[in-house]
Length: 339
Ligand code: KG4
Ligand code: ZN
Image (cartoon, rainbow, N blue to C red):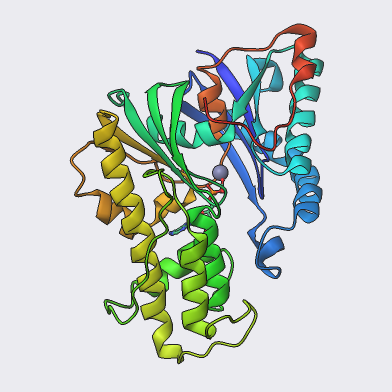
């Protein structure tokens, strides 16, 4: 047996636990999604998320160990995503992880959730990607481009100055009365249209060619759908038949902007591969657009795009362990700067 790490994820609205050997081999993974809980509110309600994490943390740990056919004693270290995320949600995972580390007298490893999204793609392939690589994290909370010198060595190139791309998908879904979670539903509707009836402009940030801004695009969609200056809960003014065209125009504008910036950043920073992570990498249109890029692309494997604990237990293998009383100093960080 190699090094067995039990990893915990509770940064937002999924409670998950994974048992992973040597940073790669998944022995067990349990995930309790809270999508149903937040659906009626159209977004994550932090207080409800925390309560559900408390209920589900021990069941997912038990389930992951059972799948791995291992006992807690067989685990070599406990890893936990200690940020970025919702403060209350983070504290529940971290407190659980500290409790396990104390009871079992095992080392603790704090993992950056955003870095783990990139590692999810790395661990999905037999061979490591050629470095330096361009990492693109495209999720509900982040839209960042980083130069990856190696696993664990990052340089921030660009990030969103307002909404994350997944957040923009979710907000557009709300405008169009599509169910939560919005991203997959906007993609599904967008597939029904090929029309260029609507055209939007992507957000550009002065003097920062690799930064993103999706808030203005969301407002263009809102005003087109509900009238100039309309509030987001105003009634739709466009006919039902135009909704797919609008979803299509939004999606193409956002994803073309991302693809262009990725291409330019990869060239400017001499990157030899592209590593993608985060929930938005499930989007098939994004995968089609990036198929034309002249670089090997590394995508997260099935189930590894959205939040999970496999990427946490996996990345932890490459990080330093925290021993002894220092374990209990590990803090929850709602924001962690890249690198
Ligand atoms: O990585 P993730 O699970 O959570 C964060 O760490 O934020 O990403 C969730 C985000 C949501 O905003 C969701 O709408 C978006 O990923 N998403 C998609 C698709 N699937 C999930 N966005 C566009 N197209 C999709 N197919
Ligand atoms: Zn995430």
